[in-house]
Length: 403
Image (tube, rainbow, N blue to C red):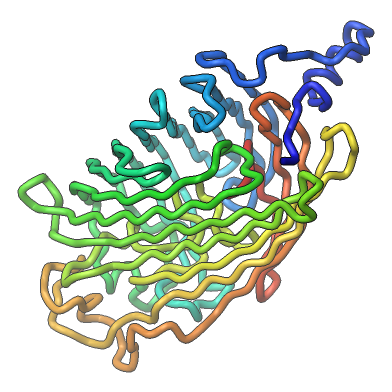
């Protein structure tokens, strides 16, 4: 089996030591997988992305194993603080913790956002020049725990809470109702629900997988008796596959499908509808700004090829292509603005002719650079440039692989 030895690799810390101390000796780890040993990757930087414009970011990634068994999964905690030129504040805490023997998987997704941003309306055929600003505060508290039922198979339960406040449109198009208004614009919204989870995960390194597969199925019913404004349900399928290609290298051919559906009769708040770049790590559809498309249902597919550039592992590259499709708004119905619980209609202001079907596909593609930040956890700084249709394009930055 072709294995990875971090002692043969170089990362930015090694480069920094060489420059600052004149030491050409690489950092060595005599225990390749030591339980409890913490690998930290931290990076303050200034950058630019489509969603934030110019921004100052401090990002850190903590990785560790809870046992020294060769089949142990790598646990990770990712957090950052961002302040952007658009006066956005973004503060996530996201963790994927595996207990000893991979018996339990504990997943945390907490976020605070003050988030001036763009929206373009509903469906897969909105125009690139139709975007206008919205502003809101957002608190997201998602927590789940899953227990192994067979090797690499898990079942679990969670609780999801989403609270939006001070929601407002900023300079919307004059003289007509926006899709947001027709769908149901309110000053605040609360969604509160129990989530049910099925997971298959044969990856061992979640930050930078080289092989294995992943399937997550999450069903979330939201209930008024738990504090939700309305009853509504969602269903998400997240499927990934990694193939080392060629088999004698660390190059990887990776595939990702992320499919997000609204089920049942209720309507989610507009800001919780399936949308471009609103997966848990905001990584779908490089080539398009976050929120570029939005609809009741979403289909998404991506493929990426990851390859080494330098033999010492310091630099690598990727090429990728993706495609997204959103269902068109439903036709006129009697549902109240904001969703209510009847009929699955999107509100009484939508024009006739919407059919809820997938009619348009928005492709994206691009390339990127990988810089090794921590060779022991295999954490890379990922800098990509993606292109989409109608002149869409821009930089996308991650700490750790996109998927």
